[in-house]
Length: 427
Ligand SMILES: Cc1ncc(COP(=O)(O)O)c(C=O)c1O
Image 1 (cartoon, helix red, strand yellow):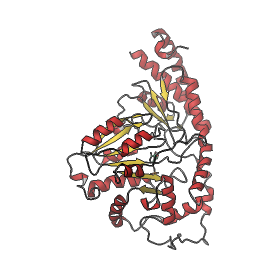
Image 2: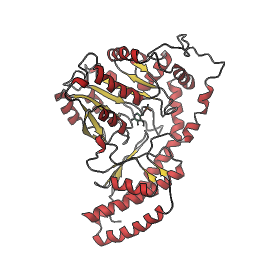
Image 3: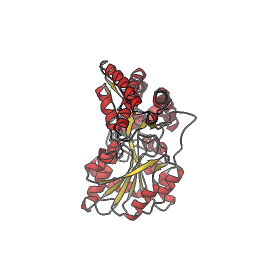
Image 4: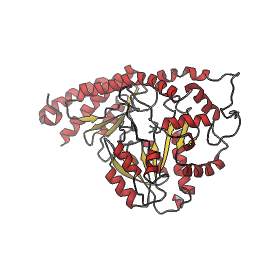
């Protein structure tokens, strides 16, 4: 079979007419499907029914140190929750503060704190002429939204199969004191499913920042979200790597149980050095008297320990795996030989990242929308919503039931074909 680029103009014109007819038929079906949201499905949430049996009116609500979790106290989180979340990040409980339900909230507050109060005694960022963040892209839109809201200048850093382009990262961080942070999703990244290599992690840990208050924002949201038992990627533990490299305070690590138990009702945590945590504590002690310790206790009772949590993730993987495999097989069957797109093949996380021909992503997303299939907005995976190539589309296969996912993928591949033909005919 010819690739689209090998076709003559006449062949492309006749293909276009054929695809347009199919597209009109699909539009007539009045579909209402969604591949935009990185949410667990109701099947996954239903699986958590026992969570609600962890407590009843006769339960003991004391933490292991004897604290009554129904009352105020333990600003840093109960000891057993600090241990569980520490195990999730591969760090000691002493290096962990357990917060409320959302790691994104901790990230937002961490940036906000740095703007208003500074970082461990340095000048507050809001008093500086310019503050910059490195943004490996494609990346997580909500990270970019935080730095955009605070007026922080965002610099695109291309992603490679091993993580961010480290030559560029080193160039910016080591030479520009206005660069105060980098957003990283180091494992099963959103949206590509990339796992940072050992070399990338080591180079990050060995940065020589021009700014003393430069921090790596290490969002380990998918630390234990493997799809395959026999193909689980390992990520070096960054806090001890930084310590070894003589940069003990250079990283904030974030994680949560949002996609382990319930998004919006999980437990989130910050991991960092003692110095950083002491500073954070000195600020949050004014902000709150303590987070939801009953939820922390429920999580510990539900999983018992980290092994319990890992076993639990296998059940999520059983539901998610067929959905990811469906995406990959449909893409391969329908467009694998046409030369009009490439995509990642993640073994964990929540997304597949699709690269269309340059200049096609917006058109594909618009066409899908018109045919009743919602995708994440084109450009959303880049700072300022600006994908320089208009090429990246994030596919989120987890939420819809598998039949709906299959129907949505049919529309998606049709729109990719049509948008690609239109682009090639423009040339
Ligand atoms: C990379 C990444 N970080 C953070 C979050 C949100 O985490 P939380 O629910 O803990 O705020 C998401 C959710 O999609 C995500 O993809």
